[in-house]
Length: 214
Image (tube, rainbow, N blue to C red; front, side):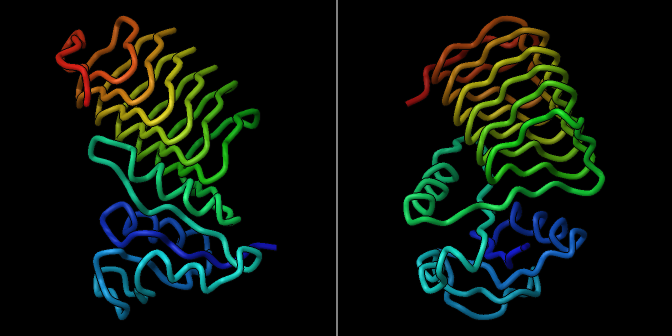
């Protein structure tokens, strides 16, 4: 049985998800927003239920959650929200836009979001709570960890490995077989031709590490 959903967050990523949910004919009970009181959300046309803790008024067995927190750089907030509600027994729905192209043997973790026009080729594994955003390409046999964001138009060549909570910027290109560590940021338009360690920011063509994060 397909359960109704509550969307966590009421920002730009949530707005795009709502369009996808409409295309999928999913029932949306409302949104939560830690910054706003309950009431109508004029951007989305859906009700804001109140803070995220309003979810606790619903038993985990009667709803699914959708993580509407996107990322500009850090994936920490998105990760924290996911883990908070998993510890309370809730499940997160996987969302796949109808126009996305995903090969039959691809494995998608819980709460993964595949946006419009994305392509995921054979042999890939996408970890829980990750986003493959609009028009991104993930080629054969890639392994993407949990809480990763592959931003719009990014291209991962075959056999790429990306560890958890890493952000791959818009239009970035990662060549075949590269390994990128956890909590890294690959800047928009970067071309990654060598492995990237944990916790660094890498920019440019070819991508160069410019600083250690944190």
